[in-house]
Length: 140
Image 1 (cartoon, rainbow, N blue to C red):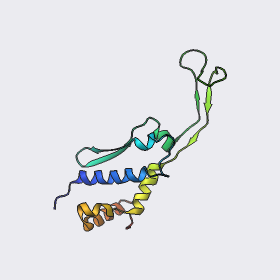
Image 2: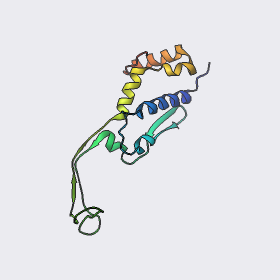
Image 3: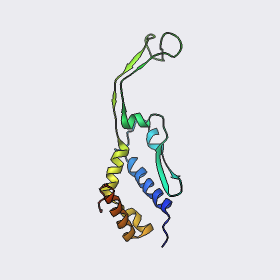
Image 4: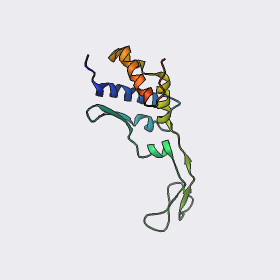
């Protein structure tokens, strides 16, 4: 039996995407963050799950307090502001690590979803190999 490692990596990444974007896990305001999760082949044998929004990392990891100042001119003004201001201070924001939670959930759910593709014995051996690397993988 020949294993297509990239196909298996893509299946794992897709499962991780499915868990990450479940309702209640991914932060939801407009739905754009949920829709921005993309799985792609990476190299010859790997796959990558990425989130294609400029604000995904600050939402996931958090960010320090920031002060916004005008790039041009002397003041900031926006629709709805009562008057121009010299700067705007935003407090630090705590992260919401939905991808980390997804990895933890996949560890709990196990890799049985791979069994139809590779067989239960190979799925079990893969889980054993991941455990040897320090990941906790359970059977469902």
